[in-house]
Amino acid sequence: MDRQPYSAALTKIASAVLACSSALAVYDSWGDAGAVAFVLAADTALALLFLSLRRLEPARAAGRGGGRRTKAAVWALTTLLTAMFASRVAPLMPTGVDAVVWIMAVATAAGGFWALFLN
Image (cartoon, rainbow, N blue to C red; front, side):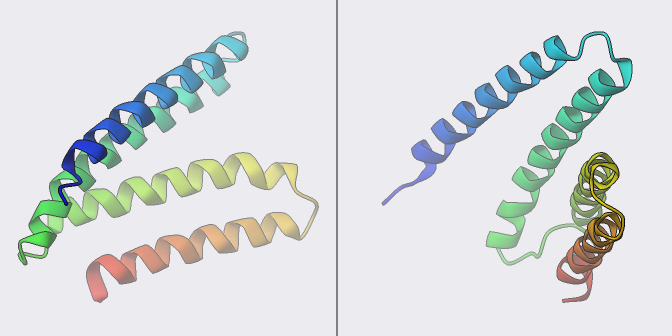
């Protein structure tokens, strides 16, 4: 069964949902430059991550393992997104839980590094 048409359709739907959600987030926080910059930076990082993953997956499926530069880009973008969202969530948490948020973010980045480069 060929799943390529379904994958392409789901990618287009997800991109449309992300675009609409981002447009609403920018509209709702139009007076707050930091919030608008956060939304735009997160969207840019997500778009670059999807492009990098699109480049990495065929190489891994062909048994080439993917390029180290592409893997580095995927890891850097996922780490950036993790840190961005942790920086927004941690201040909202009670004392002690904010440290847990950052510990989990660091563990996620370290696990991604291990999975992409050391495994």
